[in-house]
Image (cartoon, rainbow, N blue to C red; front, side, top):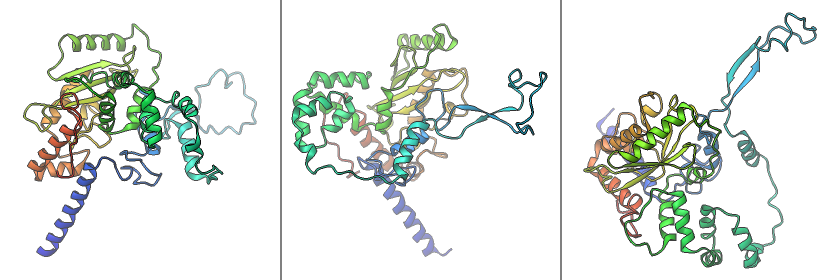
Length: 389
């Protein structure tokens, strides 16, 4: 390969990296990172709703994309016409000719079936008169709005000026404060808040994936024995976290059975994340501590080992889980990962290359992201422009 061809190839790679970094710096993603828009728009999220149902399980006892175990009868050379004898009666010997198969279909077959039907079957748009929604009286809209959750209310307020005015008149600042305390219980502002709705907006826009943030409050809790090994261990870990928490780390359960947790990690001193408070969502399976917790960031962060969806590329919570590990130790490992990223294998290869070849540029972008997304507790609402990064 000639010198000119090498320069041309390097220039193309540099342009591709710059384009991908520019995509990171946008407030909204152009398309789904998984299907590249094949299943439809992602509405600014890193993963579209269809891919999210396929790939990220809402069941704490299933791995992402893994379905339940079902039983399939194997072929035993039985035509089905023979009358079973007493010695081989299939009612008394159900285990014969049976094998266990792990399905590779989705964990949410009902929702996926509905979604795939919508994507594959042509439907009539319907004869909705133009201007019908605009002609609805405020009383009807208020009845509809009363059935919405907080994220849906915020989204409805951004549809049009009329809806925003109606919702602003009916939703008080105390209600927005209550919404924040439910969604982000570890968020504690260090200044006098004048407008809780602005804080709510900033926290919502700082989340990598809105689908995960929505499901965090809608998770079902399986029945768990109060005296189980899991329950006793989690209670012990929670007591340790409250009495002697690691520096810069907090964690609290969101439900009575400690299936869903929220944690916060303070950016390490001397790193580009210094001063930031990064929130994480943890799902603790019923088989814990035999299986690791699922951990995701719910605060955007510019890091090679953390995907744009918020997933953490830490080996100890995927393949090298050990019974000796605890929630506290997992959070400490993630905190140390912020200081010393592992760039040989990255969740985001482009960010890893920037970290390896342009460390000062990486630090500058990561610092700007920390200011914009992870310092809402100290910095009053202000505009941090990432275009000039």
